[in-house]
Image 1 (cartoon, rainbow, N blue to C red):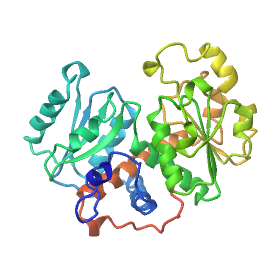
Image 2: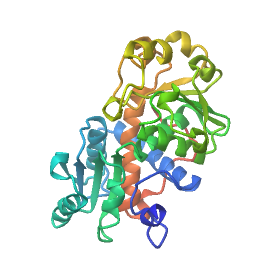
Image 3: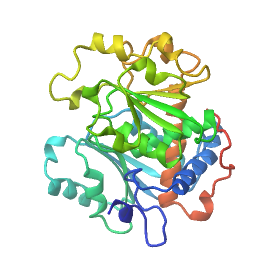
Image 4: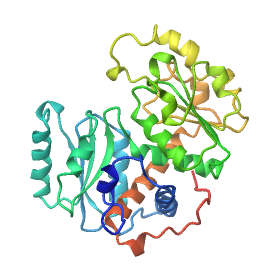
Length: 332
């Protein structure tokens, strides 16, 4: 169902709702296109005319700074007209109201909506009801998916580590409530990562987590042994029901990424975090600001990746062919 929504009859990307079901070829096309946009951010005039005359609406029913801002910058660098709307979820508690909101904005000749919502499936619902000329990008829906974050993360991994087939990746933290973790696991598996580990207390792991094609660990030290990439996640306290950890101090004592625990990974392992980052809760400042951290390059790469996705959806195909060879390392 979702894959039918995501592509048009010619096989071109129509919406970007989830990583689930995407082929390795499609993911690499996005990464390669993003590679060709990295240089735009290094120019004196940071613009290309691909989406001139197009209107992009950032429709955020849930608070965001990093994601909304990078989508806005990405659209403006493609020369699109951008409108930012932050709407209280209290006025959109029913699906009909959400669709009415979108239909009113459609009437203003909007071509692309970037949607963030606290309810899983919101972007899919909108995509299934918009006319053919309107496109939807999922900027995060509940605890379900955050596909563009996964794409910028794998772009960052590839820029530092090359191909994925030999990589061991550890995702640490609140796996149960994390839309980032779900999308990231799907992307890494599609790209053929050698091993994807999830490290968390059992209370923060989904039931039958092995079905996600991951190796679960509850012991932080064992889980980090010999990994190439460490991705830390914040505790999704706004989505927790009940006491799932003894205390924040105890959580950091057992699962916080400290220099000592980082030393269990490979010497050249990189450290990632999708943000917002809580220092002293999931990550030590010495690690967050250390030489192995690529947290700020993740943010920079997010602009190029989101440019790529919007260009592949709205731009002329001939003009968005990737200029960079697949596997070429991007400038972080």
